[in-house]
Figure 1 (spheres, one colour):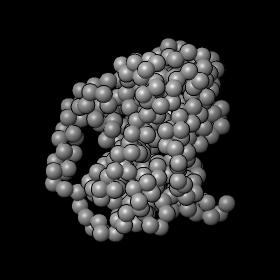
Figure 2 (cartoon, rainbow, N blue to C red):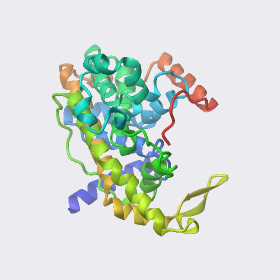
Figure 3 (spheres, rainbow, N blue to C red):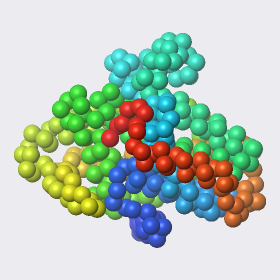
Figure 4 (cartoon, one colour):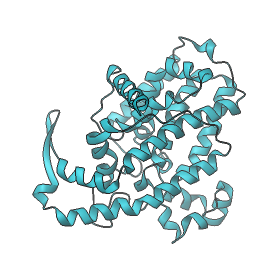
Length: 326
């Protein structure tokens, strides 16, 4: 136990030292944290490359969210509304993409989200980048893959009621994946062990969304129950966020909800960390375990740097294409 606590302390200390904000939204907090800590799950032959580039892997963990402002078709990669496929969706939906297209049509699948299939696509793309020894693509695809893996671990990314809008619980999405980590992640145990080889990434992705879907009823029902016990003036409070004053879920309300969830947010973050690291490792193994030592001190190309700058400019314009979950 002391060893686990010490490792967790070192990781959190590393986040502070890197200037990573520990009090932020899911997008700019948990995604970055998941990618960063996933680096420490990697084996000796791979961890050196990722540690050398840990700042890129961390900072660009949120690129897929930023691309929702620029790229048609990006939003559907972050979720899957399983409850649009009947009462037993995990039995109804073919797990292979071509089979699912034959049954439902590609337009239907994209309308309801494609995250498990896209995770599988990203693993294959990363495998090719490793095989080609394409430095820029390895970094970008690794960052993106970690993001989609993290999204798949969020229960509200698996339901059409993704923000409680169908049950008068609007705002619950950010409450679960932003407010709770913001308040309680200092006490999370991020010692998750070593990455493992995943023989079937598609089956793994479906297992993850199945677990998330199984948890979504608790996410919604516990908050609905808690709402009955708290008056509005106790449920919300106001906090200074930079130059703004924002209404947030109160610490008392958040603490009680966190207790009812019994560590669910921590468990899903831990699972996302080991999942991201394991899929990076899997792609590298499938590529033949190329020697990445020749990339020591390599920087991304000017072309990729310019692409990232252009994406950031579009993001700052704030024109979202597709569904926003939180």
